[in-house]
Image (cartoon, rainbow, N blue to C red; front, side, top):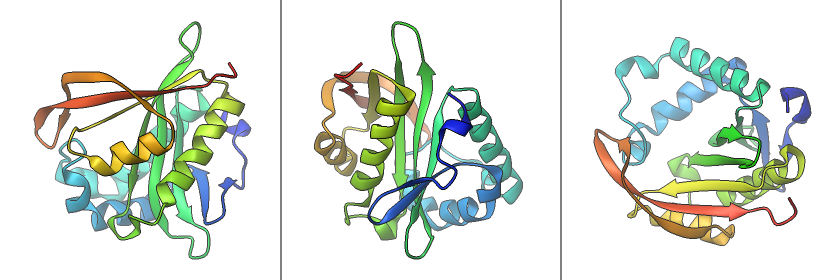
Length: 188
C-alpha cells in the first residue's frame, strides 16, 4: 500500500472528510493540540513543551506521511465537511502483513465536537477503507478502563473485548492498564 492508494480528495462521509496526514497540516494540527491540551492529557502520553511547536508538528506529520507511504500505517486527519475544521484524528499504526494482517487503531476528537456521533462516522469509514482497500484482517484498539466514551464507541463499531493488559502504556506520566479489544474482518 502507498499513499497513492488513498484518495487524493480524502474519504468523504455525510458530515466529514478524512485526509491523509502530511506536513501541510502542521498549523491546524498545532491549533488542535493547543486547544485540546487539557482534554487529551488524561488519555495520551505526557507531552514535553517542545511538542507544542509548529516545527514539531511539521516533523510529526512528515513522519506520519512517511509511515503511510511505506505501508506501515494509515494516518488520517478528520475535518468537518462544512467548515473544514480539524476535529480529530484516526490512525492505524503498526501494520503487520503476513499471517497476522493486523494493526492498532488510535483516535482522538476535539472536546467541542464530542457527543455528536462524528467519531463513529469517521472511524467507521476509516475501518471500511482499512479492511476493503488495505486488506487487513484484524484491527486492535485499546483504551483506559475509565475511558467510557472510547469503550462505547468501540462497542458500537463491533469491537470485542479480549482482555486487560496490565501496565500497558505510559499515559500522562504513569504506566496504565488498558482494555484490549479487536475487530475482525470476516471477508479476509
